Length: 218
Image 1 (tube, rainbow, N blue to C red):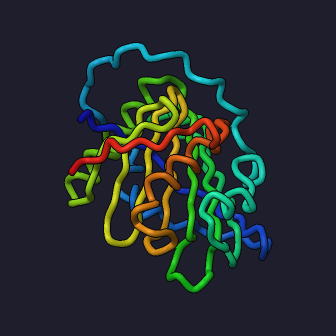
Image 2 (tube, rainbow, N blue to C red):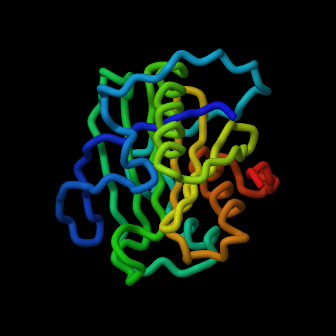
């Protein structure tokens, strides 16, 4: 299994419900991944895949990334609490041109952080995006997080699971996506399918076209 990584940087959080600004904590599943000083080892170019669907415009708020009501429908659970929006500046040193993070169900009594978090990153090239994914997955493996391959509607993807959260990292060319669920929000048997569907919708793919797959390690 090839290692991949995603970068999420220091960002300004806009709490949509409270209209206040504060520093955003780094996501636990990717907390080691954002140092611009970290470089990736060269990796072989992947084999060409089938034509991918056209990606949606880069989101400028949570409603354009994935509306809260749609997140709740896919999760099949209420998401009380706040919705947060994080915008991060470009990081030229790692080739990142834009990043936003939306948190759904923040402060709803499930401990710190949102019930669902979605981060989308755009990079100046597919290679820059692959380098960050490589670093993400290597760092996750080194700290003991379980990593397994999991495609998302034809895109390469990986599930990262620990005792607190489960995430899916998706490689969509020059765009990368990380979707994280807080453990206990859905049944463990349903986590991968829910992550696939959330990731697919955030990439502009109707969930009706997403066939559940099971490529996880035993």
